[in-house]
Image (cartoon, rainbow, N blue to C red):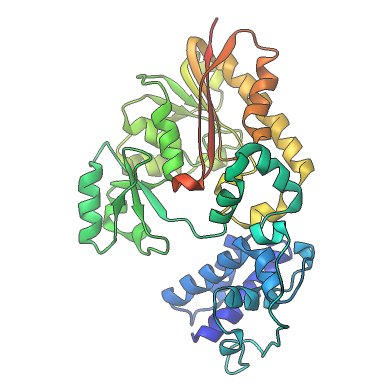
Length: 389
């Protein structure tokens, strides 16, 4: 595919995403129908789409689309604005030749953008991020406009981090240690082929953000049993099991855990999936990695920030409080509950904890921890609670 053809393919996918499609699903559908596209073509189209979603408001602004609701943005204008914002001449790609997009005429470069456009964030979230991040808000939101590095977790059950770095470098990847967690390895954004490498097949590493890994490091050491109450794909359960902890995994939707046996076997650990966690307790610890807005990981799933509403945020905070209350009921006296989110919003971190503790004299917070993209990680929040009686 020519550079122009890749841009047109990205426009087509972006248009479907802006009309409500999920980015990953729309990219997969495009790739299945584009048998002519090679791996580099698919990667380039994916990068164009996600880059445009991260910078959707500013890309539209730079393309002359003005400050309009994101649901009204024209994918052609946004893609042209993205190119212009990166110092590339859109006319070079919008030639109308072959499979390239038709020529586009952009107005003169616009003036200074409004705050929400400049930070590529919905206006209603700006004061919430100010409350949560203080003076770091603009720097954090600015960092979220760029691609995140790929971060791996060396599987301590099978290899040391240093040996994994050596093996990755021998395979051609520019691997570096990540300082936020003892098993974390950074690979530059855009690195390809890791998921089909023999190192991955042999269970030597998992894909896991450094912030997510660091959360696990904060948890008290215990042989278990520890319950991962909202296990999903099992990332944190795997990290705990690699340290020798007996881990049980549960999710309200068991289908989300279907990959855990495969991942655990590859990693050489055992994780027991349970449908009724109450019958296996009480537990030494409970990990409550609650469903949330995902605001800390919007670099990786950028369409989510344009779809979150105040009403949905309120629904999430209510369910988060209910999950935390249940987690406290599942842990033994003297045990701990790790309330976690991949959010940077106070409403999803301190808010539900305060709500639950106002009615739970049998629990207290013993530690808090958080990180943001300024730590070269996704944004996470942790409240570690102790069940006192």
